[in-house]
Image 1 (cartoon, rainbow, N blue to C red):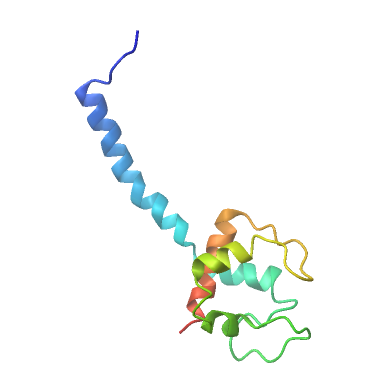
Image 2 (image 1 turned 180 degrees about the vertical axis):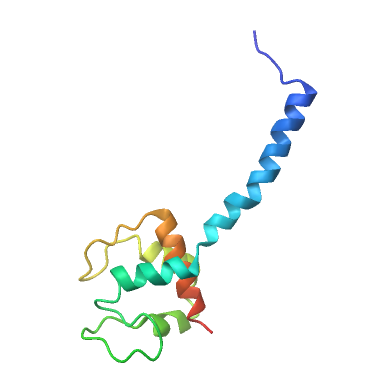
Amino acid sequence: MRQRLSVPAAWLAASLLSAIGPALAQTRHGDAERGHHLAETFCAQCHLIAPNLGGSWTDAPPFPELARDPKRDQAWFRRFVQQPHWHMMGTNRSQPEADDLAAYFTTLRQ
């Protein structure tokens, strides 16, 4: 026999979902400060990760240059850092790391 939720239980469930919904959405945006640290750790060996840091020893495109391209938004960058690309190894960033890197990438548009 199928049971139905009582009105108080349904109200409680709806209240909990409405309370945690914004928190879940917020984490999707990432943390730019953590993203900068991740970029220093994983990307700076080849990419220039911030403006005014001098040149890179490879022909990897600088992050600020990538960020200025209007076709490369936060979602593009999030996908990019999770896929193998050209000479890069170890690009399998977790979803939270990709969110953080993408948040940092967005700050470079300014």
